[in-house]
Length: 114
Length: 115
Image (cartoon, rainbow over all chains, first blue to last red; front, side, top):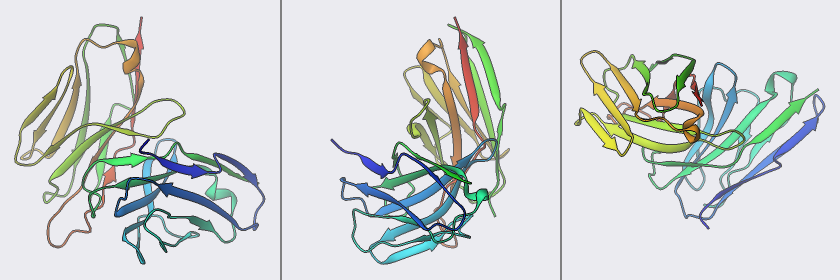
């Protein structure tokens, strides 16, 4: 089954404790992206990648890191989480290298930073 | 840069009636306009999209219209059903030479279908 898989789905952590949210897709998509969703703000892009070893900042990259060492995986790293990073996070992938085609989203990862 | 505004934030309609959600965008170079539906506890899913060389596109009960002059586009859902209850997002992007192609999203509309 074609899918984007995120882990963990739910996480409660404390300020400053490094964490990684994994994202994996099995559709051989070139393009992957991370978003955060906050009430009233819609989806805001954190980072995106159009190819292996190629990553670019989105609209809200501060406090986040990503890597794209292989085509299928695109982990999101919070080196020192803060309470303002409490949010619902989505990973997405697309067959379109630029992301201007259908995006396939994971089921989301709800992160709470205390 | 691009800015997308979406209205209303909440829309409640009687089952069987039509629903219309509107979005405006600021960048005249935008040429790709998708609509996504997000059901509770899930990620958004593409339901329809339109490109700037087309004024209207239909798929069964849903349709999208685009007015490039006014820089707005709308989602129309006819004969609404309980399963249409969800949050709907519009987005816009440009594929021009100076663009980074990335989608800019509206804030979302919560559609409630009353039985």
